[in-house]
Length: 311
Image 1 (cartoon, one colour):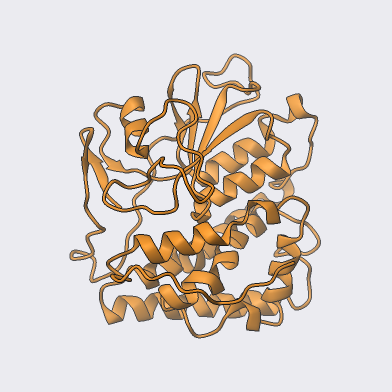
Image 2: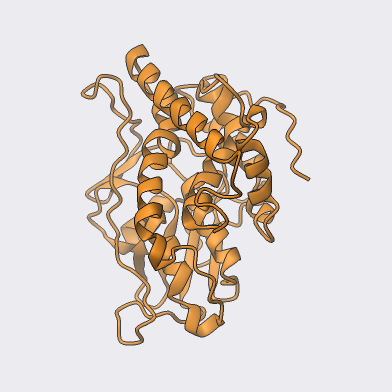
């Protein structure tokens, strides 16, 4: 996992020397938005936008789920990077179901960032929402992309499902913040920690909230009761990866999700929601984490287990 500095690629891992061994995620930099307003810079149009994703990445997975749920497959095309991310970052080579770059035939994702901004400095991450017309990045912030998918194309698709309903904004936002800090990013803070103290702090917070949410889900269908919301889908993309990679690879091994009486049936319920299971690719998930993170797994051996059965 490298980064660009003024448009030049550098193969540099995360530096935790100044944070007491704690992994700190950098903020995304492209924060424009597709709008239902036809006079906006990025109006919702069929075929104008392209999504660059990794099937392994939980942040990119959010956008694929919303593309599926909101019936946007015919409106937004997709390129899938290869699961192995090494000295050149995300790559567009084919194999294992990766598509290559379907727009420009680029070799590496960082080349797309340079195409959008020749002096870009920062991490090169997925997802990327690309505008084919202006040939630039609209957004690389998954939390904002899914909200655009949730409503910006409704007038074109006729799909009025709302996973971020106005009366629940405050509750959804509060849950999102809790889950992001302790769980979505918490698993990475465990896995990428470089001191025992940083690891243990993240680990304790992770399982404290997982235990709380397990109790909550004993008595209700979704995080906010009977209403399926954005908060559930943001939570889902971490849960579906937990037993496959985080439990072993990131040392989050207090308990598997399949051992929770509330969380496990909740996870299965979300997986079996129409279309969602099609967005899950355990081959990419396991290959990416175990093969790409050589600082954690220098042998790059990808384990055959665990046995996962959601069907």
